[in-house]
Length: 305
Image 1 (spheres, one colour):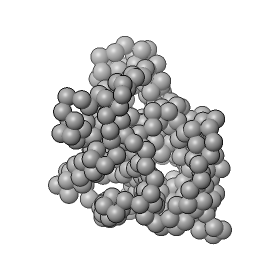
Image 2: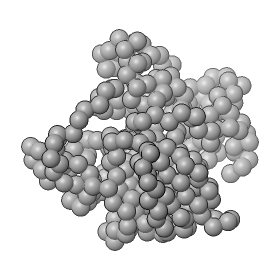
Image 3: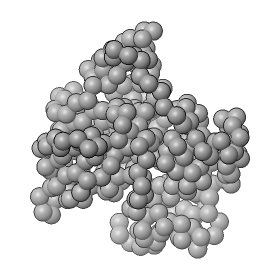
Image 4: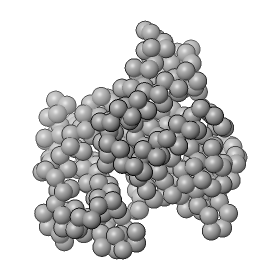
């Protein structure tokens, strides 16, 4: 998948795959999981120093299969070296971007699961644990094995593989379980209230994201999206890009092509039908945009599966 040449300091869980290297094998966005962003990745054997943007949603990365020599660091800081293998878990809610690189043995690739807890269920779990003090809570970064979180991650991967829809009670319960586990084990009261950031407030951003994902087949404009959050089109476009690193229409395009990849991979629909389902009435225009984002045409993408 083609990636952006410039990674923003901050992004969102919805846009997160745009800035990483690897192939997303399954994505909960296509299944409309509302409280949990879950992606199963197949990573290349070698990843040389990529920048990972900060997100407002807590992030969990779990290695499902494979091994790698892994390095991470704050920008400009010293590298921290680790060995990752099946069962290795990262937990973070970094407020600043950080760099990572890793290398697997020749001919092998990491199979991993990336989870972001949406802000709403995370805040709900925080309020239970720290009533009236949630604004002072910070997530404690963690790397290692978590014998409770590991089987939860395996269950999440199985639900993705089974294409369980977001309305399922199992997905809702899983989201609450992960949020509660992270809050109970990887949070603490900080000394100071966390500083705010510019950009679009997360609840407004989620409103826009939800609308876009519900209306991928429909015409959308900056004016229409700006109206959702009661902002002028010019101001909305500015703060949206400041928050996500993309213009609103780039985000719409990205979501459409992400859904198209899912439909091509997991259904027998014709490419014309897939294009129509994600808002492209012209097959040639759909193929052109798909190739710009993914790096190959829809036909070549389907043949590669």
